[in-house]
Length: 301
Length: 255
Image (tube, rainbow over all chains, first blue to last red; front, side):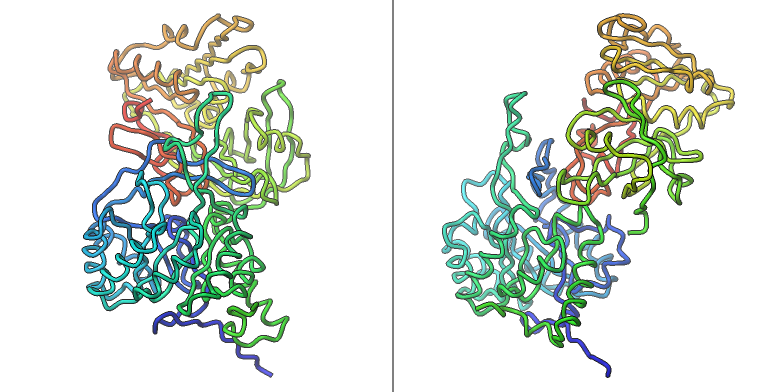
């Protein structure tokens, strides 16, 4: 008997061949791109309106089962991205989710409008949660600001909008709910946890930006819980991420309520992690005789 | 990933209390490596230590060889690995040394501590090509010096300094700069080592109008230019050590 397995998922009318993608900031065309075609979607590193040099080094430090980074969104600006990078990603044949971050409400709106005019952009992710940009407060730490920016962008674009949320809040489910009410089509969660590592020998921070964001398997159980708590509160899809290293980790996010999962930091250690996660999910479904991935989404009540 | 290999350890020897010499089977990797390039080694199958560790390739003729300093927990674990164990490596990565122009007569390699590692591969390539090869090596003390016979076999004139004077001339490697012919057309400098040392080489080269290249070292995560974590400050802005480097033009880096 031929067992037809459905791995495809849907976010706001956009169909993805499978639920595995890469987290923004951990993917660019510097990767070996052949494998990427097999994934459900691509999410390149966050772009901003204008080019930005990024933070002074050192920008990264390893920690138990993870890393702290403060890259500071080094990027060439949205126009260079659209003309130089987007055509490369569009050729991969999988939906492209473009992650953007603005310094002001207007910047979010301008960038979203530019991307709305690009046929090869499937969805727009609003990165409301980068912890390394010297703002006093992240947009995603304020339900009102989150809702305001989502609503402003939603008004000017017809592509689906994803709000990328910060775990550095009292209740991420409340922020997700505010994004949903403002019209977000999905949320992606979680960004990094604000963190610091001190070099006691040199008596200073090990990060040039002083503080950074913790990612990697160290944060996974917290991220799974946040996805679970949020899934109880909102109806829009969740893209879950936080230290996914294998299919078991990814399935935890899916069972907690994530429609898609993104592999991030682990790709730095094992470049084929996302592909291994995808193959592992298939093997799991075969072994458990589950024909449709959707049966697993939010399985745990 | 297409440039990821599992290579068996052929030997892993202690040279001094700090320095180790690791030989891996060549696999499909050895033939691809150019002098100055590096590999990223997965130290353990688990998550500790988390990052891969980047190592310059010391030699890549019949095997892949690393000459490394035990500096932290990653290299400590590596130093305990035995013949027959398998290492998961990604490479070759990064830029390589560019070869000297035909006008060049004297090639000076200036290594500080374990920064000497990429110069064996470079001297393997430049040996018998008509250059005067000079190696200036600076180490902290006896633990950072070793038998230079392999460099000498490659035709290098070797000069050593140590901070404490236990081997060679006492002082930083800059005490050996008098071996460099200050001829802008005919001298080419390559340097690798601590920042302060490379800065002194940069100053010397600038003063005498000498061309050169330097090989930088930074903590790396991905090793392929994705994460932008390992940037080096240059006169042309931040550049990734792993992909834009590790070899840069000597006058480009801001030390």
